[in-house]
Length: 364
Ligand code: SAH
Image (cartoon, rainbow, N blue to C red; front, side):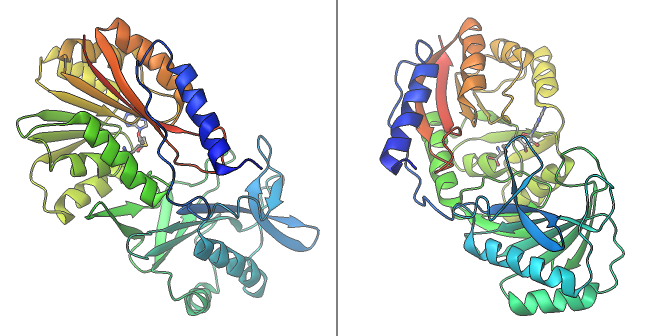
């Protein structure tokens, strides 16, 4: 209900107050180029309301489906595809999964759109690969939405709240999207993390690299690197990049992305970022810069301790959670670094509680 300016003001104030005493200069928040329909990853949970198929987002903290929930933020083509699948589901006799009885076929639909290339990946999260009308369903859906470039079936029989299961089968196209970001091409599989606001992601990475101001002699670490997006972009400005990532699908995407962009100075290691840092510190490896972009939980005290030993001249922390950011910055300050400046980046317009922040730290 807030005006966009008011929303940005609140986000700015929140970051300023959390970083108070930790970073001397918080620059003005970067506005999102798109305020609506920016989400390039859309998922809808499917359920039944009596005999009617319903789909939408879960009400926070529950598994109650809010039909049409989140629509204002979601890519319009993705929303239209999901609406078509809901209509086709009964025609193709797909049963809808019921969480209580654990029976039924279709659980969720996830759609990923690549704003830079127009590619669209549809993931049907189901309980079985067996689906008698598969061929016809694919034909019908791609006939209705020729913009779909790939369809994947993902098997999820789990009882926890994980969206995707471990096994996937591509039933149409290549099984991933390729997007273009900052003039580079990136392959993104359905299991890999990808920033959800394309244009603002370009602003975020540009700000991070502007803060880092790397030189061609610098050897740097891209911790929590996902599909290698930041490291591959950074490789233009520095000597060598080592990416570290835990998710093996994302690592495979990153390897492919290094190859796709004909990059020679980036390597990606599969593993836990903290473990990698600990080993690098024991071996006294030399890195001039560290970029870290951890999940919402932030990083670990051991990661920060290892930075103390490795002693890079600058650290750029990209965070999607200002609370864990502030907690981790306290550790960095104790470990001999100082906060130089920070910029909040509005990656999630309309979602008041989420704000991204880029912070530059240097040796004290
Ligand atoms: N920098 C990337 C990804 C950021 S999201 C981008 O901008 O796209 C955070 C990433 O950290 C995810 O890819 C997640 O799989 C990875 N991750 C989570 N825990 C990790 C850990 N302990 N060690 C290494 N990577 C981890």
